[in-house]
Image 1: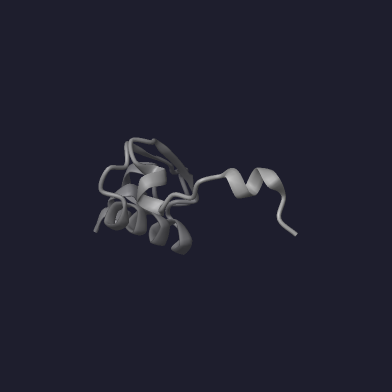
Image 2: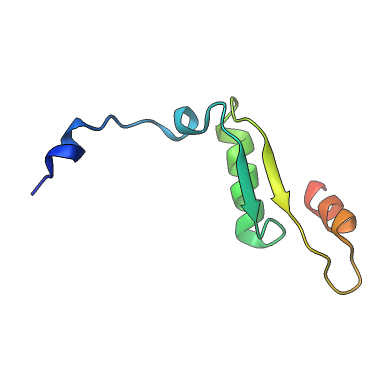
Length: 71
């Protein structure tokens, strides 16, 4: 059964959907966060800004954790 509203919707590809949009990523230092960031950067050339929320953890401050992601 297809609802009428869904039949009228147009579908977009992932790069088209993220074109010129900004994205906020939480959990960006974990495995899935790193995968998401790399996939967005590789697959969506027209993406806007990607904002990362990184918290301090034990002996590493947020700047050090960001540097670990960027390596």
